[in-house]
Image 1 (cartoon, rainbow, N blue to C red):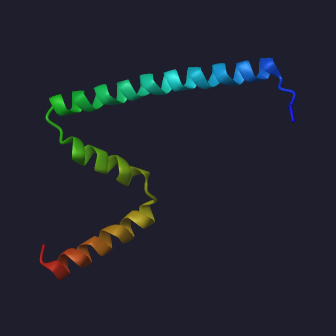
Image 2: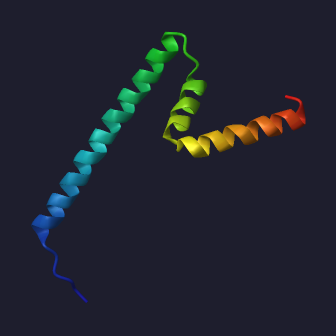
Image 3: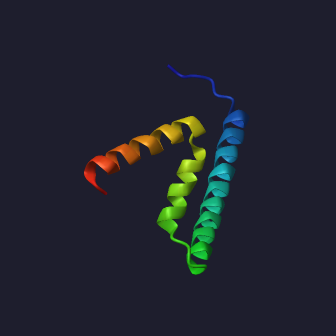
Length: 78
């Protein structure tokens, strides 16, 4: 069975996706450059990435997580 396709709509959709993919690649390059700059300044990239993840979390969830980590660390003497 053949479906009727709106050619212009498909062209527009593909063009939009291509543009967004290009922008995503540019952003990826900018992020990579920012990490390199941070590394050059002496920052620990692993810690920066961890901090970025922590900043995304809800404060209450983060406090609970920190509390559990302290309990576990205490139990393991670390």
